[in-house]
Amino acid sequence: LLGKGGYGSVFAGYRKVDKLPVAIKHIPNEKVGRKHKDENGQEMALEVAIMLKIKNITTSSSGQLATVSLLDWYELEEELLLVMERPMPSEDLNVFLDEHEGCLNEEEAKIILKQLVEATIQLQDANIFHRDIKVENVLIERSSEGLRAYLIDFGLSCFDHGRKFTIFQGTRALESPEYRTQKKYSAGPTTVWQLGVILFEILHDRNFETNSFLKKKLKISRKLSKNCQDILTRCLKKHPEDRPTLEELLRHSWFCGVVDGGEERC
Image (cartoon, rainbow, N blue to C red; front, side, top):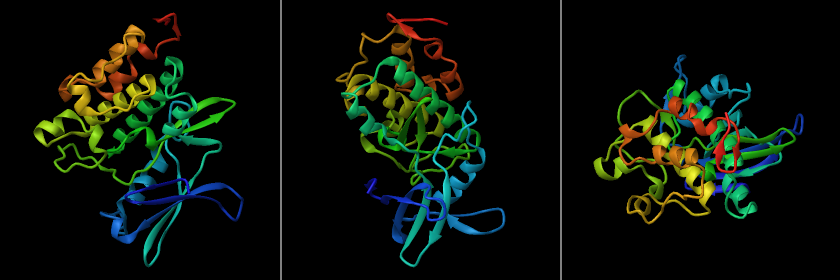
């Protein structure tokens, strides 16, 4: 068992034909949720439709997929099975943090966040809104080439047509401030907020909670470099219109060069 949540369970396995490591997600039919019709009129689960679209478009700056690929799916009498690639060796970011005493240094955090920003820009360009980006939904692969981050679990995702959302889907403790006050939220600013939450957690060894942050019970560490404090502050602005866009985020000076003695080198 790799993971279990409100929408199903994920098991490790191997594809018979070539022994490729795979993750098999079991979703009871009553949890499948919305359906989607493709251009040919074929009806399928929304999660399947989104992962098929992602498979065709989402590559990072290195030319690699920024999400795990959907290899196959099966609609059975009682459940939906999704067969996805399983990078090896890998673990979710939450487990990865536990193995690193709860937090990472800025260089490691920068590598992971930059890849996640690139991934979310690709999703945005395809009109896909993940809705539940958090440390448990980021997979970290370790290889000789370094760390590689993947976005996983598109069970709550949807297609974004530019309208505001009024029904909350995601993790309540991490919800963006605008939903708390207005019961409305948009894809772009919410995604930036969620990326800020991830960055906060991987640098502070503390679980983020929106209410505590707004009440100033959680504070951004002054031990971080000035540029790092700035990117966190911008992502976690209370008002969505004050947050940067994903493209602006990628151009932030924190991603320039390496951290050395708390200063950036570009």
